[in-house]
Length: 344
Ligand code: CP
Ligand code: NVA
Image (tube, rainbow, N blue to C red; front, side, top):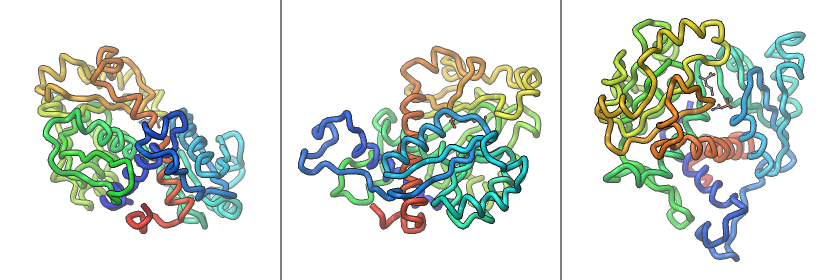
């Protein structure tokens, strides 16, 4: 739902929040004099944020809880066995009740319709913490990670600039990249499809030759509506997908809720493991880097890549916190994402 300028603003804000929030860094390391140390906005002071999670989570939950502390608020974790939702109570009634007591809802749901229904009836903003179709906060963290590592990609030309050049630190600009995705068409990829092309990056995707591993119609409709399809190449050959790639990305082949399809999926994705050999043979750029939302299984990426120097997966995971903090600040703290450009 965000415009490219709002995405850039949030990434820039996340970078800023990260640098002012890291209490273990000295003022010098943070690039400011001690007398100029800044604190994150306390925009969630006296506010409560409901975390409705009907599926497991490590990173998203931890990010939400720890970011809320830094913004001065309280996060309430509501797992699927904790509240009446889905057993004794509808999404409509739950949204109204929670929205009467909390100032924001961060929800991880099964079917995407569930979060649409929460959003329709909630009097407070609702943010998607992962659904069957989308995982928007993951891509914000991925973008922050790519910007932070911009120097690894040669020839920076133009990219986004910090919105207030007087404010340190600057978010490094990122040149237009070629991003390859090898694997299942799942929520993480879907947000890449509607985000990267609008920011000037090219996407090359390989998924098995079966409609169930390609983007579902509502996702593709949105890709087309946003004019992103022109920036996307989609085939079935992983070697072709990684050609010229600056970044190679994958995700689990078996998303949460698909466990019964494990055998069938392991078979369908044979040949899709991300390895040095695959990327060398396919002609990825010599300095290609690797991203993965985690959790990870070895069949989708081998240890050499995952734990090697190409891997940005742990900085990426750290950045979930700062990007979620930026969205919480703007959406739940200030209640005005549309004014994101003017906030910082
Ligand atoms: N990447 C991600 O969403 O991880 P979790 O499922 O652990 O939150
Ligand atoms: N596609 C994965 C992402 C996990 C963060 C899933 O939905 O399980």
